[in-house]
Image (cartoon, rainbow, N blue to C red; front, side, top):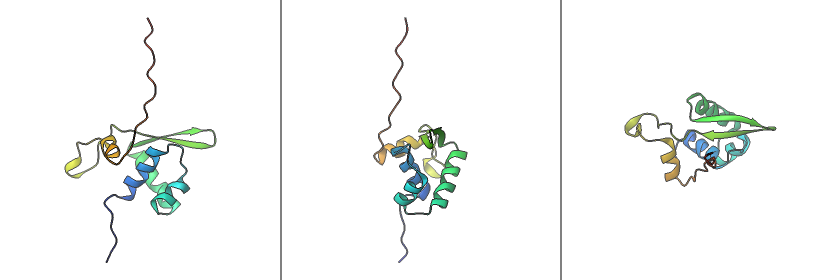
Amino acid sequence: MTEWAFLTNHALVLMCLAESPLITAIDVADSVGITERATRKIIADLEEAGYIDKAKEGRRVRYSVQSEMLLRGGSVHDTAIGELLKTLGWKQILPPEKPLSL
């Protein structure tokens, strides 16, 4: 019997990036169970579609998920990606609010 999963590799990679913004592509690949090359392709797909942003931080890359982006296709196209991630256990860390200056 063929193995299958509820979540695509794109969703699994996105979850890894959301949970660990400084994670390496090698560690994502190990976590998801795919090659590093496939992981880098998925990261490029997610960035091109606007689901993530990348910023250099020293020698590493920090990933930030654009949680307000909507899921693609099907009957869930009006659901934000952040809602899916929260359902799967993601706890979004928001930047601290700046105090109002009087």
